[in-house]
Length: 473
Image (tube, rainbow, N blue to C red; front, top):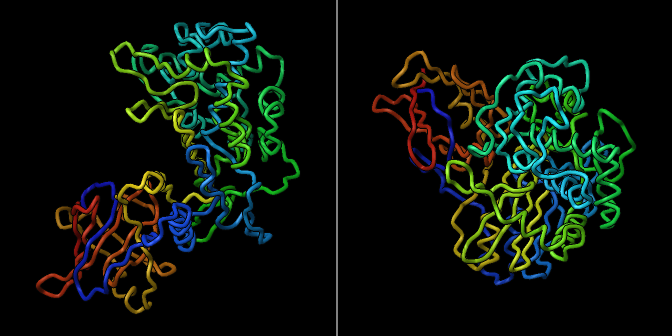
């Protein structure tokens, strides 16, 4: 097969049983019932595990937990389960900077070198550039994976030191363009510490979480600073045998351990209930006055003339329906999302503690707005092992004989690997010959047909389009 990035939703042939999709309760006019039916079915086939809170026009539509919080101790999620927010943390880091600015302790126009003189390549970068991801500073995560001593847990100062040693130029001139970089928010957290004289965790606790009575929210580095955890939603990923495990136990996600001391770009932990308090505080201008909030949502124009829609830890969208703010987060074991519509008082919070899931935000919004459902979610069926086994083996790409796809047997699945992609990825049956990936970010699949000579043909699909084919040896 060619060097392609696989990605799906398939269609049919060969002795197949009728294709089935997850069915939303179309007979109900109740939005809660429709959304709950979708999330329940996704949870039943391991595509959703987490808590959801949905508010429309100020009215709570759905607040519910789906799945496990702690598999080892057989604890289920509940409405106060605490999740790592990953990059949804960035809005709290930005708010810390705003509060210090309001106290006249810093300016958005301050140069980064005022706080980090060792970062000489940042001489023209401002705090505003950090807040809006227009700094040009490279992302630290790849550098740490390549250069850090994995036997130690890194903290912010270690990253600053590495940046000073390994980087001598920006990726682009400040404000030239938008480029998401976790380094920006790490530096902002360190600025909070330098200016306030407090740790990042203490500053957010004293100035955001405690005043807003977000009693289940905190900055938590549970590997760097182990602490007793109550009602915690442990994050899980799939190992090579398709079992749910903690990411700490796998070699490919081990960075969750040695990067655990780093704050600012992540590490805020919270609940759906606390995030509703957070949303209300923004609407009521409790911490951030209206005039300052207006500056946050006003958006910068980059030097290339394009409007930068990222601002202060939020992605801002302006449309004829009003203004919306959203952000997603991802870290091994956690997938998170928050969106809030300013003018219509809508709020969607999705916190998941399993990495191989879908985030059906678009479908939820379509249900809330009484719109046709545009996306189908594939439904896994159980196939007899004898059917699965006939597909096992090696497949030679039609256009490149050196490209070999290997399919091995998984749990009601076919495990995909190839000479180009060592993914060890499971594909699940939706019919006798049609298979799909449950990963939303890899929207891929394949189908099996037969050649004229009776050999099995493997057809790779991306967005309902054929992207390659291979023949079984």
